[in-house]
Amino acid sequence: MATNTIAEFATTSSMDPSCQGDAMEMSSLSQSPLNTNEDTVRNEEEPPQNATSAIPDGGYGWTIVASCFTLLFWINGYTTAWGVLQAAIVQSPRLHTNIRTITFVGSLYMACMVAFGLISVRLSREYGIRITSLVATIFFGSGLIITSFTLEHLAGLFCIAGLLVGLSTSLLYTATNTMPTQWFSRKLGTANGIVKAGGGVGATVLPLATQAMIDKVGLQWTFRILGASILVTGIPCAFLLTELTRGATTSRFDWSQLKSMPFLTLTMSGAVGVFALFVPPFFLPVFARSIGLSASTGAGLVAGFGASTAVGRLFGGWICDRMGAFNSLAIAALINSVSMLAIWPVSSSLPPLFTFAIINGCANGSFFVALPTAVAALAPGSAAASISLMTSFWTPGYLMGAPLAGILIDAAGASEASSIEPYRAAIFYAAGVGSAATFLIVVSRLMLTAPPTMELSWLQNLHLILTRVTGACPQKSNWRGVAVSEVRHTLHCLADRREVSGGQRVVTNEHLVKACHYFDVRILVADADYDEPSPPGSDFFRDYYDDATREGITESLQAPSDNRSGPSSSRQMERQRARKNPASPTKTTIAIGKRKACEDAPSANSMAESRKAHRST
Image (cartoon, rainbow, N blue to C red; front, side, top):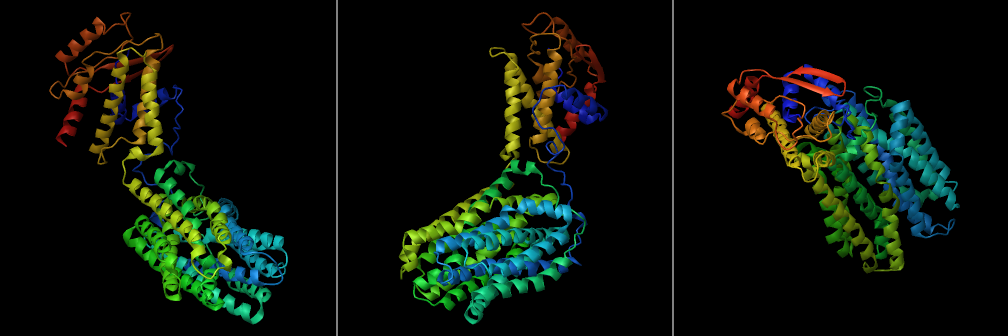
């Protein structure tokens, strides 16, 4: 069996760059199922592509922020005002339905807004942010105007107010989420906070304005006025959206991100958390009416909730820049769940209910600022597509979060009740899923500082190399343990070399890929002409790795002898000659069938000097 080690191959390739091509060419002969593309084996310390070094951090970016502020004003304002609109639709004699059915219209709108996220990214990449935003703004405003003519038809509400408006706001939501990441880097949290504050201002103003318009001009004209206002103010803002580099913010998503446990856990936390985020604004008007408050008071509570989301979004961005996106996200999710668990169930009068609306609104606003900022920190080179992919997982929560609460409310008869008791099931449901989201965010944060063993690809490659080592050896052969020791020492050498070069002394995913390749090469070399490899010398690893005083230990790679029970006499003679003459270089010759390749191995002195340098370091 060839006794040239994996570590010696790795050391040779690191000292002599000309050997790297030969090593990789040899590794391609193996039947490795590993994905060896550039993204998989990319060093974890290398910065991602499309890094943020050339981002202006201001200038025309503030115009972008103002435009996104206005667009998000209408998106979030309409979303929050839907609680007022659905209460008016239920009480309208034009359409005989219940709150559970109408809630599905608003949920369909929000679900479409996130479900079409990846499609929105693709359209933005193909046609540009400006064109897609202009078309989306026209559809958004026109959809609300058309909705005013479909209030007597439930199917029309689902198709226009739900599907069409949801698709258009998906395109606009993608633009408002991703354009700041192209123009800001160091001030990204602040820029995101200002943009999201626009949504908070809309959530404050539109519920009150909507209730006032319903009282003055009726439900139909309310939809028409909202639609016309969106067209007048939204089209100029969409026209001002300019990409710094065409397609820079709409880069293709790196699907290997899903193998990153922090990103995957963060995505799961958002998917779970959105089940609870829209329960308060959707049901505060109904809840207020059940405890004896007027419709205008209910609209005022929703407006207070929206105002607090504006404050939370604005200061949430500032907190992200100073505490970190993950820390601020965890705090926001915790406050959101605690307020629903501790304050809302005892809010049987206006003061505690108003307190709950303010606290929960602040946490809600901070959540929507910190989450895209955290994603941008994990994937700065593909922020747009990463955010859109993550928000696409919010579809079940947007579609079923509020309706599930509505089902619990109807089942308990809370819509006709005059107390808080029938609402407790829906409240505890929202608090429970909020607590689960908080736990997942904390887990994702802890994984950022965890060793590489937490990475899914790291575990897969570790399992693969161990399977290769044990599977290549007969079950009762001593060579199995020898091979396992060799792989272990190889990984230690690679980690040591990483530490010497200034990195952290850890075994990276790239190390595992290299070790698997080198092991495959050894197996192919040894089995080229023989059915069973012979074991290396029993003192080989001690001499090569552990004995600092015996610097001249080298090995020659030879074909196995006919004696399979132990090391051949020729190998013992080579070892003795190496110990007597430590300065002599070695030649390594690898034969695979009829194909031969020769490479010069480093001298024993050079390897000894490198070991001395590392130990002194």
